[in-house]
Image (cartoon, rainbow, N blue to C red):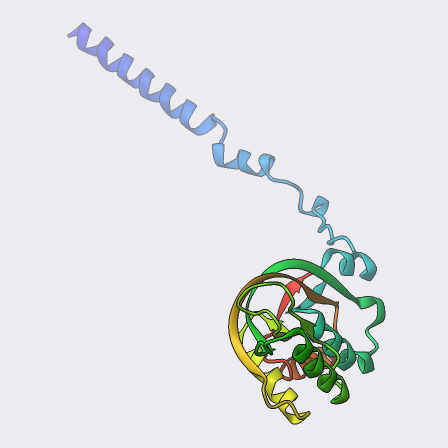
Length: 212
C-alpha cells in the first residue's frame, strides 16, 4: 500500500503546483492597456485651407461653343453678338467642313445675265454672294450662302425673301468649305441665357457647353 501513498502524494503536489501557477501568472487582458494610445496625445489635424484663387484655378472653366458658320453667317452672327461686348472672351476656331445645303439663284444662262442679276442683288442691299463662273452644272448660278443643315438654309432664304428675293432656292450641294466655330469663355448665367436665345435666331447652328 506504500506505492498508493506515494502516488496520491505526487498527485497532490501536481495539483498544488498547477493552482499556484494559475493564480500567480499575469493576466493577458491586463496587457491590453499597455498597447493602447494615450487619449491625451490624440489630436485632430484640420484640413488645409486653400485660398479662393487656388480653388478657382483648380476648377475647370466653362465655355459655350457655337457654330459652325460660313463667312456669310459669321458676319450676321458677329453683328448680333456685338451688343453683348464679350471682347477677348470670344474666340474663333476655323475648320474645314462638308456643307450639304446652299441657298442659290439658278444658272442665268450667260455671264451677262448673271452680272445683271448680281447688280439687282446689290440694289436690294445684298452683297454677300458668289458668282459661279466655272464650267459645269452650276455655271452662271449665284451662291447666296452655304449651310451644314437644311434648317439654316431655309431660314436664310426666308430672310432674303423678306428683302425682295423671289427666285432664290434651297438645294443640296456637297462641298468642302472653311467654317468658323465661336467659343465664348466663362459666360455668366445672364449671358448664357442671352446666347441661347440668340442661337434660336440662327436655325441649323449648334450651341453646346464644354470645358475650355
